[in-house]
Image (tube, rainbow, N blue to C red; front, side, top):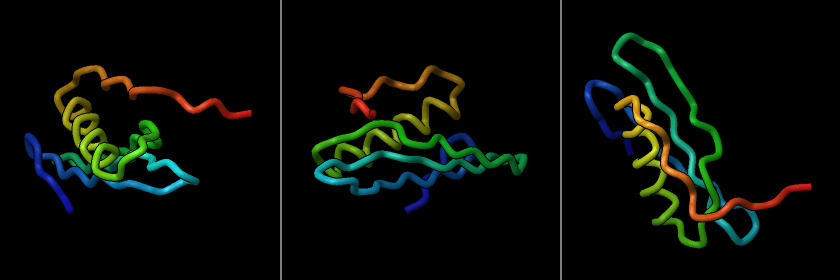
Length: 76
């Protein structure tokens, strides 16, 4: 689903990796600039990951700092 916020098109997405759901978001601004926010955080729930991706994208469009995910997964 695509959301519009202050003229920017926002496409949140969720990818399952193992037992977690990873939040991601892509943004297309009015001037044509496209930005991918990449992996935003891991969640136990698909719905929570999706909502977090939307919150992060809205913050990015508004020029605010991105919210912190509830925890970080350690990688080796």
